[in-house]
Length: 219
Image (cartoon, rainbow, N blue to C red; front, side, top):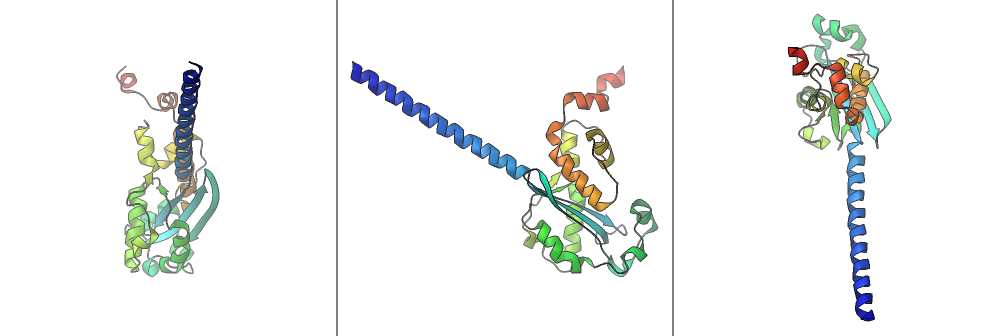
């Protein structure tokens, strides 16, 4: 009888030990996934004209394990240094500002070092991703060498899914308490990085405070 009780006890201890190991593995996987989600690169481009290949400025922010560890900003000389007055009115960059600036091709080795193999974040990821792809194509650079995901993380889309009725960068930053000098590419990239880091801070109370519900609109 004592032998059976001892055997049962050992079996229970063995099962408990296996359960602890499984829980430990799950916790480690969760922590590792969270660390990966908090390690990324945010980017923003400004254009000289309506052409997606007319990059005139770029801002990049590197985040590792939830902390901003590096940042980069540069003016870029667009093709033929041509501008539209409409775009200059938006970001304030003029032909004289980029006359001596490096071209995208000259700047690319630096950009590549920041971006290669990164989880990418942008506020309107489709825009910045296509700007990068099309500008690289213009200079006969292969986008595949950057080893990036075909779709990036988009803070505009993330905040829309979490309940924001309007997701302009300026609006999101105002609500989330983030400083922004809009259309300064480094400031925009920094804001995108901070929005991505703060995405889990969005609550129903915050949404209700800043956006009317359908019921409130009808009342």
